[in-house]
Image (cartoon, rainbow, N blue to C red; front, top):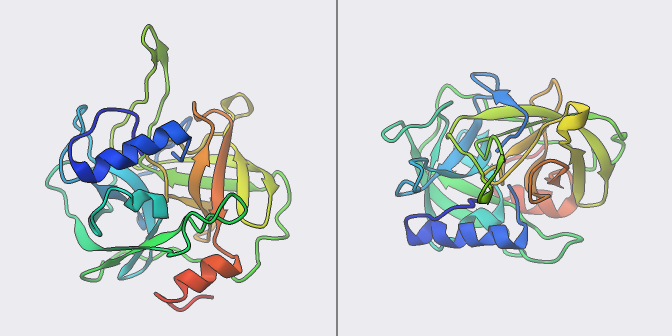
Length: 253
């Protein structure tokens, strides 16, 4: 998810999604380093005009399955590359695989089925996958619960003479936000820097939202406000529809 000119047909369509407000890097955050080694990014076949490569984020949920958002696959090809580099540079290790979106994707606001996996050609070794939540385990989350968001998206959105600019560096970042509300399909998480929160931006689509202090990925980043300063909207992974899709690819808790 990019707000810039891109190179390559596979990512050009993803860039257009910005005009519709579809998700988001981590703003008001800090470099994640080795804190979340199972969080990775989808790597474009050619660099963007600013020299960066990653267009969406995601997480390893089994040694051969990478979780991301369905809208990250709208570039056309079902063959993609994934990196787990903390600061990706061209030539770093990538893992090839096949992109599979939930076939019900696009079902509407109440449940968009905006979830996908990349089935990797070979196992990722030395990385412990994230944990997925148990069925309906998030329904009791209270407003104010702390959520940790991780991804490779835009790290700042400064305003200049030409308008707002979205800055990227292909570094895995993380930030903490607080839960505003929960609905049957969504977690809405404050990323308001005025209250000390941070969160997702363009390029963080598909990235994990962890229950703070755990390796449990509660939801994946899907969308938010245009300037990445208010709300990160994340798709719940404990719902029946999300589990029906993910259960085809791994054993769920």
